[in-house]
Amino acid sequence: MRAILIAGNWKMNPGTLAAASALAQAVKDGLGHDASVHVVLCPASVHLGLVDQILEGSIIGLGAQNMHARPDGAYTGEISGAMLVDLGCTHVILGHSERRHGMGETDTMVNQKLHAALSAGLIPIVCLGETKEERLTDRTEHVLLTQLEGSLAGLEPVQMAKVVLAYEPVWAIGTGLTATPEQAQAAHAFIRNRLTAQFGAATAEHVVVQYGGSVKPDNALELLACPDIDGALVGGASLKADDFLKIITAGREAARRKANS
Ligand code: 13P
Image (cartoon, rainbow, N blue to C red; front, side):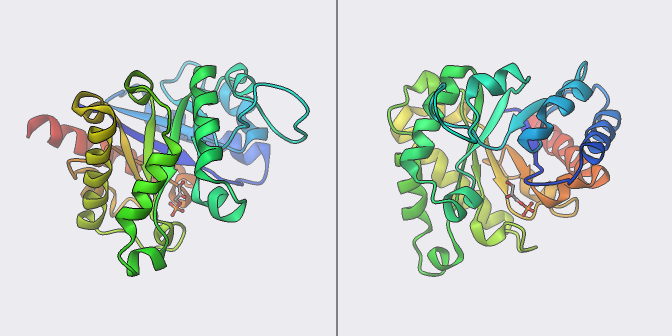
């Protein structure tokens, strides 16, 4: 059975080191040592070192929100995979829609970063998802297929098994609109079918596919209980420790139900 992975993408929040350290400490204290779901915090890059120190001795993973595809060199303002590992990172988010749509990141760039992240020993969380207009014009599956083929090009099944995917419909991010469990499950099943076609059934069954887009304490369980939804990539609600911990509790309940089904 796939473990459930709940990750908090803090984006460009909170605004101070003090607030970031308080948030990480509150999540650590609230989580305890229950390892039935996997938890990762993804603070801003300038807060990674401090959050790593706070998380020491806990079971919480540390993720960056982006990285550069090259291992070193003259790339002003960029951060390499090896630097992230050195800071204590276990994960890195790649191809978030705010980078695809806001900063022109393409599937090819995501693919280069993905290969670099795996080489550096990081677990990549590769984001994909359609815009509202693409959904309304029935192009969701076409968009997901294009993003999957482009972003995952050149991977061997053994590499794919280390990758996490996050289905994040762009229209659901930060809007309060959530995909219904039926919409999300259908997209996740489509993604897993494509993984089966490209990498084989054993690998596809192994890959964790998270859902992201306005996940909140009151909708987390119905989403996480869906058979092909293996976790959540949480934005806004991960900035409040209480809400994030409630989503983790929902993840534990979903894991329990799946184990018994
Ligand atoms: P929200 O949970 O704020 O909608 O953000 C989702 C997201 O973008 C996570 O990466």
